Amino acid sequence: MNNKGSLTCVGTGITLAGQITVLAKNYLESADQVFAIMPDYMSEEWLKSINPNYKSLQYLYQEGKSRRQTYREMTEEVCHAVREGKKVVLALYGHPGIFACVGHFAISDLQAEGYSAQMLPGISADACLYADLGIDPGTYGCQSYEASQFLFGGIEPNVGAYLVLWQISLAGEHTLKTFKTTKDNLKATVRLLNKYYPIEHEVIIYEAPFLPIQQPRIEKFPLKELPEIELKSISTMVIPPLTPLKLKQEALDEFGLNITDFGQDSK
Ligand SMILES: C[S@@+](CC[C@H](N)C(=O)[O-])C[C@H]1O[C@@H](n2cnc3c(N)ncnc32)[C@H](O)[C@@H]1O
View (cartoon, rainbow, N blue to C red):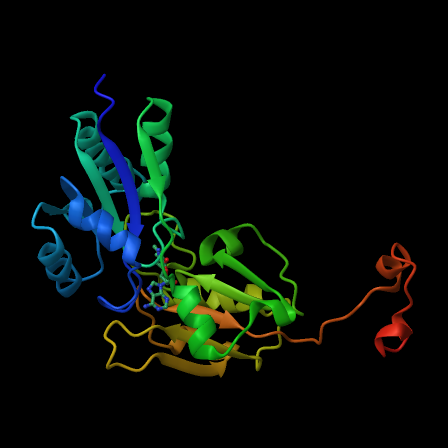
């Protein structure tokens, strides 16, 4: 085994060129080999300008092929270069470990084989979302799920907190072989969400800008209209709280506190 190879997974942020950390850029510049899964041609060109030893792994995505297989193949390609003794950087847009499994897989495989493998944080879509929508997740709390996982699991949301559904454009898509969902799946999504939220509850489709000169997409509409709304692979759905944050006397009892201490009604 050649233990000299190493892997660093970095995030490039969402907005082109401006959201990468100084540390991540240093690793990119000094890598023997850069692999990347970037959303578009312009970010690929930008990465190539940082390090010409660049290879996109996008070619492994194919309509009809299971994404599970694609991710395993991507992991294998990255690990192979490390095993050859190269200092490898895997660059992923946003944060490399948020709703992105290849970095996690590769790090886990390589560490098990005794290689040095690490992940550096990056600016993710939800980091942009908090900034553009003016949401502090600390105010009411925030739940974050992959849309299909949330729907298939019949998960009951806390309606007093924000609910963020990632990959809403794939909601209900179970084959992992195609890149968009159907209107029927979106209607089913509305039916399931309507168990907890009124059909008129205002929800948001959010898209962080790719270029610094662009504006974010912040489209607000009643839940019932979801099947008619244009969804892109970068769309994230945000469901604002329905009810105010409540305190429970039963929980406060554990701290010797009374609900009236917080100015709330004891009823
Ligand atoms: C495979 S995940 C990648 C997330 C990425 N690693 C990150 O840190 O943001 C793709 C999902 O991230 C969200 N996403 C990606 N780009 C986005 C953008 N520009 N604006 C809003 N959400 C985005 C969407 O929910 C999309 O379906």
